[in-house]
Image 1 (cartoon, rainbow, N blue to C red):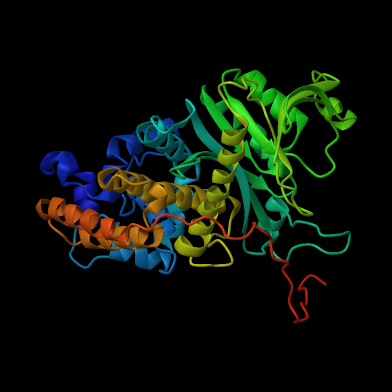
Image 2: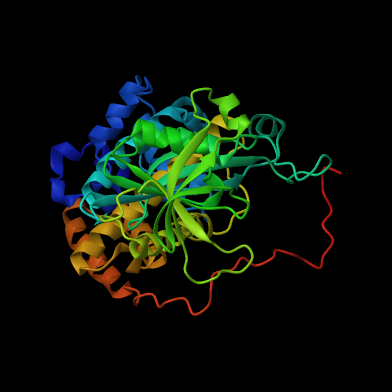
Length: 441
C-alpha cells in the first residue's frame, strides 16, 4: 500500500522505482521541514505528520474528491489490521496538529531546487525571465475568516460576498514554475505583497510586472536590493515624465517625480527617479499599452524591438492562475478549509501540487525537445492523477514501466505552436442581466 512504501522506501525500493508524486519530493525533504518546524510525529499515529503532508498536497490534485476519500484512495494511513480505517474527525485534527508551517517550508525548499534545475539555462539576452502577478481566492464566509482576510470593498456600502485571500507570486516566465509566493488579507494591495518577493530574485534576471505595479517605491528598492537584476513595467495612461535623453524615435531616457505619498512611506526615496522608456510605434487605442518602462539602460545589449517583444511573453503567466483555478480546483468557488490556519495550509498544498505538475511537464518537454508551454497542462494533470492513484495499489517494482509509459503518452499531447494573435488583446466587460442580491444587505 502507498502509505507503507512511502515510509519504508529506503528498505526495499530503489530510487528509480518511485512515483512522480514522490520522485520530485524526497522523503528527506519532508523529514527536514518537519524537524525545522517542530512538527514531526513523536508517538505512533494512524495519520502521522509525514502522511498528512502528502494528504494536503493531494487535496490540491483531487479537488473533486472529499478529503476522507483522498485518504482512503491513497491509503494515507498506518493501520495494523486489514480494513482498519480512521474516523473522519481524525483528519481535521491531524491537519490542525501539522499546521501550515511545514507546507510553507516544503514549498520553498522544493521551489528552490526545481527552479534551479529547470530554469537556470533558459535565458533572454543573458537574463533569466520572471514575472510578478497577483490573484484572489475566496473563502467560506465565517466570522473567523472574514475577520482575518476581510472583504474587498467596492464602495462604502458594498463589498465582496466572501472573504478574499490576496496572493502575489514570483514565477518563471517560460516554465510557469512558481518561485515564491506572498499572500494574506485582502486589505493589503498586490504591491505590498510584491515588496516581500524582491529578496528572492536572482542576479542577471529580468522581472516583468503588470501595470498595477508601477510604483516608484517598489521598483527603486527592487533594483537597490539586486543591482544586477532588472525590471520592466507598462506605463499608465496618466504617467507624467520628462525626456532627458533620446536614443531613437521610440526609445528614451526619462525622469519622473516620486509622489509625496511614496516618500512618506519610505523617506529614503529621492524626489525624482529615472528609467528607460520604450514606446510602441503603432498607435494604440484607449486602455492599450503605450510603452514600457524598464531598467535596461544598455541600449546596445537590449534593443528596442527585443524589449517590446519580450513583454508579451508576460501574458502567458496569467494562464498559471487559470490552470490552478479552472483545471486543478475545477472552478470551485471557495477553498475547502474553514479556519485561517487551514486556508494557509490548503493554499501551500495547492501551490505544491501545481509545481509538481509543472516540473513534470518541464521534464517531459525536455525529452520531447519542445517548450514546456506546448505540453497540455490538462492532459498532464489527468495522467499524473491516474498515476498517483495507480501507485497506491501497485507493487513498487512495476512503477518504472508505468512512469515510462505515462511520459510517452503525455508526449502525444504536445500542443501546436501558438499562432500570432489576429486582433489586439482586449478585456471583456463583465456584466449580467440578472439582479444580484447581496447576502450582506
